[in-house]
Image 1 (spheres, rainbow, N blue to C red):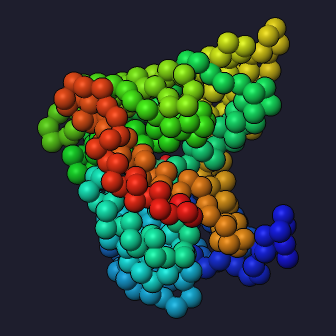
Image 2 (cartoon, rainbow, N blue to C red; image 1 turned 90 degrees about the vertical axis):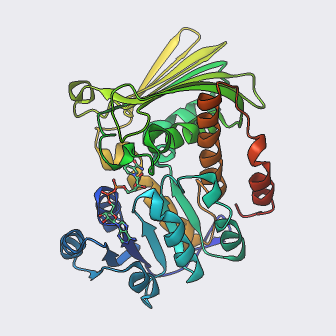
Length: 357
Ligand SMILES: NC(=O)c1ccc[n+]([C@@H]2O[C@H](COP(=O)([O-])OP(=O)(O)OC[C@H]3O[C@@H](n4cnc5c(N)ncnc54)[C@H](O)[C@@H]3O)[C@@H](O)[C@H]2O)c1
């Protein structure tokens, strides 16, 4: 029946997962808790991983992505493989009219976006990118408080600090190192929380810990927003000792300073808001990765959007913008220059033709 004049379709959404590593397992666990989802099958080129996840949820197991995507019952595909395979998998899933949830980053380089644009344009299926921090309860609460107090920050600081992880695949040149692992997340969070676009900025990149064959493990940037006069600093790296992280997810810190207040997000669990002489602290529940990082809420949103026939967020356009900004940051660091997006105006113009994205 309808809610807010939107028809909600009956039945369960039938889902398949490609990639049975860390994120495939995380999304399987979230989807398993959503009543209106039926997990149909999982796929991994590594048969041991596919079997383990398939057995855990009692679903069919595939080793080739085409076999899962073409399976008659499947309506929606979760792409939980590494970025270098995303373009091929998105393309094939959309070609078969499957709704697509794709883990971040969209693709490793802006050049990969061009061939996806026509596929997205011609397709009625839903697409969502896995910028999960948008759906973290603490971020949702911050947006609510900012709206309530009509709060506009003048200065903002964003920090993503993780324990060493870039000696794994994410630190490789092909997978993009710190820019693709954390950079896309932090850029999307800036755009989402501050409800503005980035107009220009400057970035330093460093490989401060890792050796060959890895790429950068550290980034510091300053950016200016477009509509509002806000100045933003960002730093993201993997130099955190495990004891700092503890079990509390001390990974994301945000400080927003306005002329009439300060809002602070700590550890993805606590929000403090200081307005005039009053201080309010919000604890958004006990820390657990599935909920505190927003994974459960993002999956619930995606499924609801399919059931309601509405477009999910963050969208394909949000994924493209993060990819373009990451490339612009890289160019800034390489050329020692302030960056803007002008080089990629073509892609953006193309994207603006898409009403739904
Ligand atoms: N949103 C987040 O917080 C977050 C966190 C970690 C990773 N990620 C992203 O999620 C994606 C997956 O990361 P991960 O850490 O789970 O990787 P992973 O290496 O643990 O798992 C990926 C799996 O995909 C399989 N695979 C690769 N190509 C395949 C193909 N063509 N067909 C079928 N299976 C294939 C691999 O065998 C592997 O088991 C990456 O893009 C990564 O950047 C997101």
